[in-house]
Image (tube, rainbow, N blue to C red; front, side):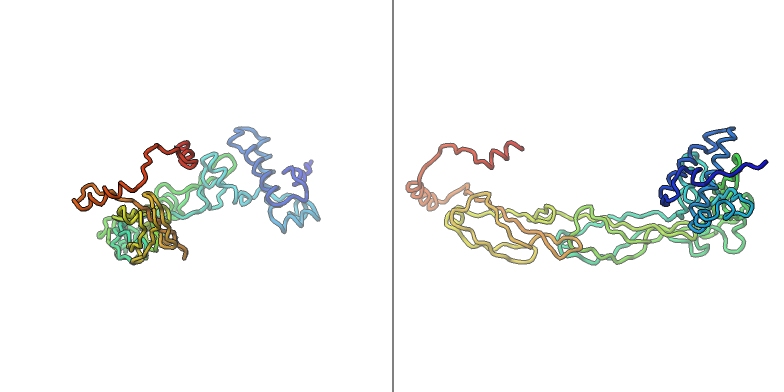
Length: 374
């Protein structure tokens, strides 16, 4: 006596108009709930696990789903049984593999890492440049120590003629199959590490390493505006990986030397300009040096020590942009420590005519706020 198959939508507990994501979410939940590793020896859980996989194999395929919606089980298989389809787990192998440590549990060939090919190692190169170069940019010739595939064996590590033989464990497939419950579990071959071949005779030039150390000359364009710690990535300029894989990347890490005058704060520059008492009291026009050449600033009469002047667009260029920061000039009024006889006489005359107010001044609102916040 045959048992009627349950409706696939009922098996997955979804409505007939559910979208693909809802279908997938419900299926994953059931697959985890009834997986044989979570229910050892439970025949009923194993059957429900198969039933969910069968339902999802049909409903996740747009063409099969359409036929099933019209004609039921007869549409997907003449005998009324769609059967267990391992490919139903092609988008789910990573999850179950991570949970149970089974790798490519359904034999879909994706593996635990979703089929990502191993690539070569990345390389870091520290480059010190002058402050002025960080402002203007430059083209630098670098000598990068790195590994390259052996010219004789092309990275295989074996002698070119007969040095590689087919792996006796996986017979050249790069994978081995294990039986777990009713499932065939596929794992990377531990003998050949997935290459399908093993070295019988090591390359005489690289001694089986497959690589040799070289220094490669590269021209690197350093854009204007780089700062300490800026990383420039050069794709595929790192160490090579296994045969057939992509090389790693080269990261050039920038260190900018300090400037004797200018201090960088984000994209702005700051410098301190000393002036004498007469310049501060009477005002003056002063020429200062900037990264872009000489510039003049006008000091008004009565300029106080600590005053700040802003010169727009004379700061640091913003990376990958045409905009620049500003240059802030901080005034430092210098009081002479030693006076000539004539200077002393003039200052004494000036003291006699200047008002004297030595009472401590009350803090301004700005100073109070500054002190409050430290």
